[in-house]
Image (tube, rainbow, N blue to C red; front, side, top):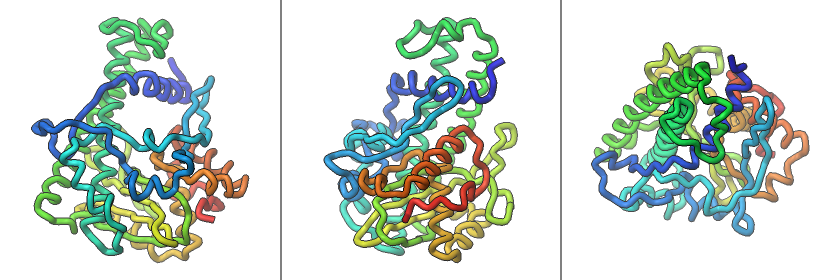
Length: 341
């Protein structure tokens, strides 16, 4: 049997080795009926946000380095042309994001807030689809249905029934998650077409300027008072209530948009509203923890990140790695973490 920690390391290695070999081109807006040419789209506006925090064309982001029996994360520079890019929209439908790419955010603009959440949902859908294809390919490689590919330790797992069963389980769980994301895709597309932008609800927080950009969706298990929001156990998860977190600098402020599908208001509104009532310092701690625990699509201006206190940087990277290995379940894992110093 493969130990749980070892499994998580191998899962990351599989996604690293095979994910890049998966050619997935799809359009979140048009679906299978879209005939447009798929482009390399940014999940965070390159023109208005990423270029504003880049230095000499580079940003800082957490990068995984699976080594031995654990996964180590380090902060590394990444070129802006490769940052947050995915082939999940066609050139025509990517134009739906022009209101947030070409114009400053206007607080309370429901269309812009809808589009920020919509873009995150598109990236999360694409990422999940790539994962599914990678797991399925790994299963075929181990079973001998596919020829070995560079970067995948074929000899280590060939004929390994436990590994094959694990890949089958991951494929089934991921396919189920993708089905739930497809329901969200239909919901978002329908309401966008009907101009029903109120179908996404958003709480806006404002901090002093910090050169950070985030665009990620995630599932919270519990709220501030321990109330269940999502039961993420694979055998019981039949419906998801994601939160979409968008963070960007504008003017002399950092805007934090905490969005969710309005149909999930009963369980998510209490969490979002309580977050809005916290003091500014408390909000910064909560949001810092949400980023570290749930947001891989996170970028810093290099000099801003370097200016953070050494302990803050250590805590952020440590918590980021811990969370990726599914060890973080609380809203606040580190009550001293604040990356908005």
